[in-house]
Image (tube, rainbow, N blue to C red; front, side, top):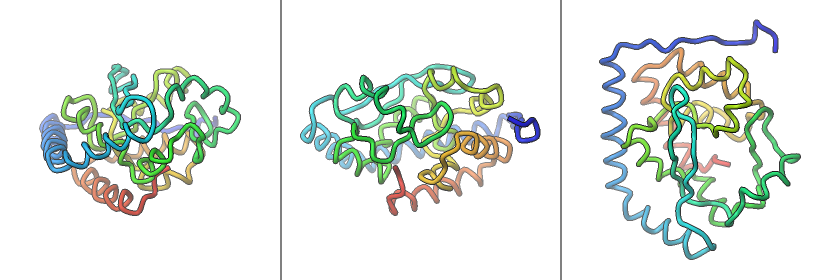
Length: 214
């Protein structure tokens, strides 16, 4: 990659603002969990009844500064889907270390609906309560993906990963270049503010209603 196309950022914000961000994350996630608890129960029941396997998909992800944590989602794929992923690698629609496929045959019919409206991500509210994630931040990558990062890609690990991000509201289905995805994350880090977080959360709600997920 040409040097002029590489973005370098720093993450140096007043501690009081970071405490406010954490407080917002905690309170917002707590309120959402309480309000959405009936919906979570119904979705969990549907996942269990419509395909064999556990309700939740628990996966190891890389968090801030490379710290590993367990991320939770509603299961959207058939059981043992990870074992056949290698058979689909030639159909990857995203450049770089990330695997993305809109019509992934491993996804259940219910899973397509959950993904379309980002409902499979709701269990990550628990990760936010725990402090593993934030409401807004770069999406948490897999360890195998991070192993393939270029040095400048690793800057997206400067902050806590988020349940939503600029990538999800500015072209989640249309961005096929991983470098472009990373540039959006670095733009967020470089220009972060509480106001920006609020704007991204509001636009995420609209994206969920419209069903622009993959």
